[in-house]
Amino acid sequence: MISQELYRQVIMDHYKNPYNKVDNDVDGYLKREALNPSCGDHITVYVKYEDDVVIDIKFKGTGCSICCASASVMTNELMNLSKSEVIAKVEKFNNIIHNADESNLSDFEDAQAFVGIKSFPARFKCAYLSWDTLKKLIEEVN
Ligand code: ZN
Image (cartoon, rainbow, N blue to C red; front, side, top):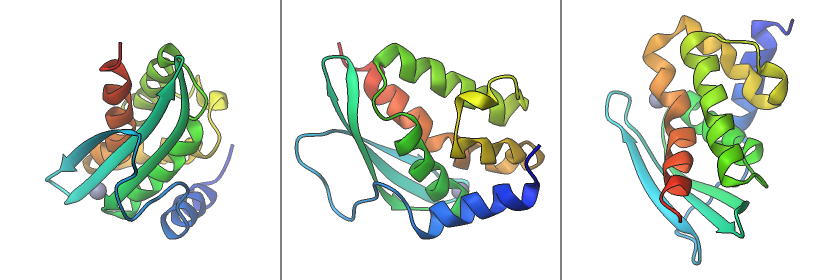
C-alpha cells in the first residue's frame, strides 16, 4: 500500500510540471471547455482522435492543484485508447474517487494517487473535471 505522502508528492509533481499542457489553442484538435465554479477551475481539453484511437491529448487552463494535476495525469492515462476503452477507464476513475473503489487501481499509474481524494468530497469535481471532459468529447464523435 502506497502512503498518502507519496500520493501527495505525485500530485504536486504533476501540478508543478504538468504533462501535455499548452498555453494557447491547438489546431486540428477537438476541444471542450469545462468549468468548476465552486473552486474556480477552468480548463480546456483538446484531443486528436483518429480511427477510433486517441492519439494525442492536451489541456489548457487554470485551477487548483488537484484539478491541474489530475488533468496532467489524465493526458497520460487515456492516451492511445479507443473510445470504449476511454469510457471504461473514466468510469473506473470515477469509482475510485467517488466510491473509493480500489479494485481497479492496478489499471492506473499516477492516477492511483487520487484514491486519497475520498477524504475530501469537496475536491471530487476538481479531480474528475478533465476526465469527464475528455469522455464527453469522445462520446460526441461518431
Ligand atoms: Zn479545484
